[in-house]
Amino acid sequence: MTKGPLSNIRVLDMSRILAGPWAAQMLADLGAEVIKIERPGKGDDSRQFGPPFLKDAEGRNTRESSFYISTNRNKKSITCDIAKPEGQALVRKLVAKCDVLLENYKVGDLKRYGLDYASLSEENPRLIYCSLTGFGQTGPYAPRPGYDSIFQAMGGLMSITGLPDDIPGGGPMKTGPSLADILAGQYAAYAIQAALYARDVNAAPGQHIDIALLDALIASTSHYASQYLVSGDVPVRRGTEGNGGMPSRMFRCADGDIMIVAGNNEQYARFCEVLGHPELTTDARFAEISLRVVNRRALGDVFEPLVAAWKVLDLLHALDKAGVPAGPINNLEQVFADPHVQARGMCVESHHAASADGKVRMVANPVKFSATPIVDYKAPPTQGEHTETLLGEWLGMDEGEIRALRDKGVI
Image 1 (cartoon, rainbow, N blue to C red):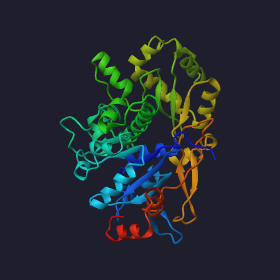
Image 2: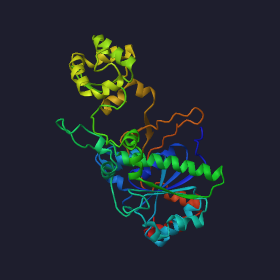
Image 3: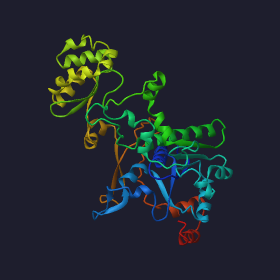
Image 4: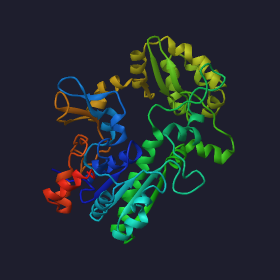
């Protein structure tokens, strides 16, 4: 089996719910050995985030929620109560054998247990220690708790998502997925790899990485933030409209909806030809991109009835033939039924002993390597599944030592 790019890296994942586990899953997909630490009894909070839950052979809910499944594949799970001195000692022993530690506790929480960066770096100076919190390790908001929707609100994303105020249903809108968590997890995964490269290639020491969900969300507003910083103009909500070429928006056809983007003047001209109205190419209001941006409302008024006369599949075929970018607005059932998505292998199956058919379906990692492909997808571990094996293999503990920890409730 091909080894992943990070196959010699060991990661201790002390994070819960989404941002941290997502980052650790990215590293696990790339071949790192990721050990997930869970609380005895309850485990990762996300195990309770259901329904839906994976069903067993009798149709009963297991403890494996779809939320937990989405962020914990390719990992191993051990249980450890870090509130107990023996649990803290166990973590320190594990850290000594790891390259990376990921955590998303409140600022200062792990210092109480001697598991903060300053303490653990003394035992392992090469350690890359990544903290993911809502507001970061510094600043006046650092102690605050927070959730994804709070960061979408505070970071500006909700102000630029949704319909304009003067349209029925207009107002700030949260995105469906928890993008602040996902984006922070992605930033954390690439920052960890950069820190490993700096350590192993450029002779840098181990270091602490501070990732804030609010920071990650703000950075990801990208060209919208740049628009404000360059011009001083506050971007507004435009529904499905883009900010580049026009038209760039959803249109309603006779039997459904379609997304169309005429990104340049040539595509716009071909769009007009498909609709049977080439004269719109030279219309004084729409002849250039800048004019179409300024006159976007008038553009919509003209093109909406023209598109509405078409059926979705007919228009998609015509636009594809003409080289005008367009796509259907799919629900997730349609997404995974799409032949192109299937050809790209975006759904994978793995063995799962708890499920009714012995399988679990997961979204694949989208990265395609030519030499070190991601081909090994192991189902997310059950709680504490690897506790005894890892304590024996990594720390050399015998059955009696492990049993003593279990009797004390440490594992």
